[in-house]
Structure formats: structure tokens, C-alpha cells
Length: 375
Image 1 (cartoon, rainbow, N blue to C red):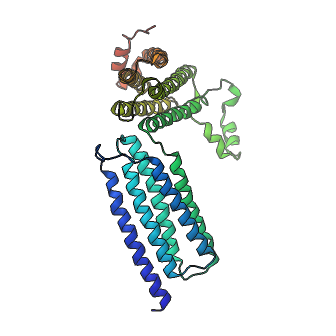
Image 2 (image 1 turned 90 degrees about the horizontal axis):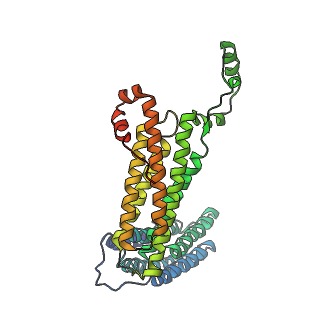
């Protein structure tokens, strides 16, 4: 074995040991830190992150210029992994007092830096002794990925309220995506010229090349009755988005108006996020049921779930703050249109009683016959 091969083997062993140490240290992230520990400022984590990105950039430049020796590479690696070790420990210290959502955000940000660092150093060691142009390009690119991961640390939420607020915002964005899709639903055409009326016409049509994109609209054309249900669903999702936005405003106002500290109300805020995510799931379910043939019983079930979850959100929020008039008003509007939808579904099921009985929907009809739209 030549000198170069021996140096590379030693570098591989050193890298493996460094990576193993980081993996062991990272396991502490699975443990909840004691509240008696002093909380580490996220600014301290950012400082280490800046140093990591600078070190990776410097090492990448040395590789691109083919000026690094085995000793220099090993020294750079040792200094880098010592910093990375401290980075993980400081990151863990920053989770003191953090709820599950904030802890998850912090963990994900740290893992991104660690994974990109591992990729950079694996390629650096693997490329030692080689001077191909491809290696000269790859290593600086990987150093850039480390820089991006360290830069992204600045976007990591620093408080429970911000982390949970972002989580609820993601739910609102998802609902808006559903709303956009529902608005693309169209009533079926009543133009008889669009219908194939004879075998000859069918044969002629089959000989024509059909663009695959034309199939994108299949299943979107609704009957007048189905379209009415779809329009009500669009209103429901729209009102749900408004209610969630008001919830976000209420949560944001907790810090400014009522001086809610970082440790206060975390359990309630986490519950609010969980409830909002459940509402998001039901909105997805509702949207999926609107494509023909519409699943009326499933639509009724989703509407009831959304109503129940909204009640729970309202109750939980009022435990945190009394300044939630806009959200309460939004909930009232949402629940009112949900009741209208239930009555519409009930009417549709009653118009097709045989289907209701055969599909097991008769129980749904019985329950919904007693519904009264509340003012």
C-alpha cells in the first residue's frame, strides 16, 4: 500500500470516528431537557453555524485549488467536528422550555446542518489524492450546501408561539390549496352536440388523436345538484380559512396584549395546532368527496367533524385569552354554513331514498332530519 493510500485510509478512520461521536451526541435530542437547565440563546447557535459555514467554505477552496495535504485535511476535519459537537450541544440547550413543535423545528434545522456536513466531509476524504475536475466542482458545491443549511438556521422559530403559529399557517395554506382545486369544478354541459349519438360518430371519434391533457378534466363535471353541494363546500372551506387566519391573529396577540411568557400556555397552544391539523384533514376529505359520484354520507360526516373540532378550538382558545371576538365570529359563520350543507345533503339523500337505504345512509338521513339551521 502506497503512502497516499495509507493516508487516505487513516483519513477514513478519523472521519468515521468523528461521525460516530456526532451520532452519539445527537441522541440527546430525543430527551427532554430539565427545566432547571439554563436555556441557551439561539444567537449562540447561530454563531457556531456561521463558523461552520466559514470552515467548510475554506476547506472547499483548498480542495478546488488542489493545495490541501493529508495533515491539513485532518486538522481541518478535527476543528470542524469539534465545532459541530458544540453546535449540537448548544442546539439541545436551546430546547429548554420548548414544546414538541418548537423542539421538532430545532431538531430538523440541526439535522440539516449535520447531514450536509457529513456529505461534505465524506466527499472531501473520498477525493483526497484525486485531482479530477469533477471533484474540484463537487466539493465547493457541497460546501455551498453546508452554507445554505447554516444560513437556514436564521429562519428557525425561536419561541413556541412562533413555531405553533407557523404550523397553523401551514394548515391554512393547505386549505387554500383545496379551495383553489374546488373552484375548478364545473357543471356538466347540457349541449347535445357534445354527446356521441351514433356508432358512426363513436368510430370517428376513436380515430382522432386525443391529447392526454384532455383527460385531466374527467370527473370534474357535476350535475346541477352536485354543483350546489360543491358551491356550499367552497363556502365552507373559505370560511374555515378565514377562521384559521383569525386564530393565528389571536395567538399572535397573546404575547403583545396579555404578556404570555414562553412557558405559559404551551400545552393549550399545542392542542390548538393538533385540532387545526385535524380540521385540515377533514377539509381534504370533504374536497375528495365532491368529485362525481359524490359521497353524500362522507360529506355529512366531514362537516360534522369540522363543526365539532371548531367547537373544541374555540373552547381551548378562550381558555388562553378573552380577546377572540373575531375568531368566535368566524366560527359562527363557519358552523352556520356547515348546517346549511348538512340540510342540503339530507335533502339529496331523501330525494334518493332507495340509494340511502341500500348504502346504509338511512341512519344519516334520520339524524339530519332533526337539524335546524341556527342563526
